[in-house]
Image (cartoon, rainbow, N blue to C red; front, side):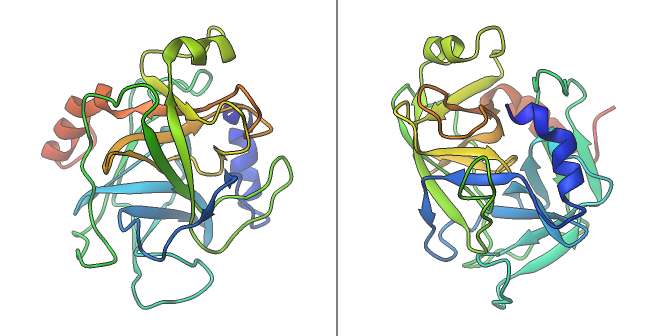
Length: 250
């Protein structure tokens, strides 16, 4: 599961690799996900994120690092396209209830030092509530490896189509590990999935943000093991209160 590789995520940044990955997907149309964020550490992609406000990025709490560069307007990480906006997180606000063992409350807000410039390549996305019904087709995206368990790391943003999986089905796959703050999405036949390196990236359903990638089975995309996402509807008050406060909540 993703939670077993938190230390590995930090370690792989040293040799230039990240464990973030999309399996069984395709290259997104350039700049078709203008809310997508790449979070960098030591000039390497480390996690995904989502621009939900001109001044705030939403991601996973297990993506917390000492220093986080925020890259907006990206598509190909190896090519300067003239659409990018680079900055560093001014405030790093993980949820106080985050459990690094169970990954409950796996959510974090990053405040930009100044508002992003919104244009065709950089846009915000709204959080949709209530969470969509079972079977809803959704899209996840990220720059992680396209193979598992070995890594093949694409330069261009990858997308994958997944469906919301019923809670009881998810609990059968992960007995005793699914909390009320998690939702499951995937393809039960296998072959399509997010994985560790896509952590913090968006799960978008019906053009609204539903979740951020949190954890799942390893190897990724195995049959009967959907990916696990943080259920954002459970955190609307925390998100709104943090942004209104302009700083991390005490």
